[in-house]
Image (cartoon, rainbow, N blue to C red):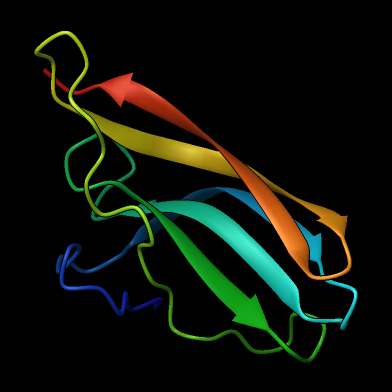
Length: 102
């Protein structure tokens, strides 16, 4: 089971979806994924990041680099997932998608 490193997501992770992987110039793999305590609904879901230095055989503990999604038009939201891509060398870009959680 994937255990998050961040205090922002303390629930047990039992559902993982929407994984996106980018390979850095160094060969390290970076994965952005959605994880949460259930497959249904959005409660407890987080966009997490993890890394592998052995072509995906093992992965680091996941962490939540975006623990505080913005409120838009007075509506709380969460980052439902993200797509990560290498720009060049070890530079990455991640496009997150926010969903209304009100």
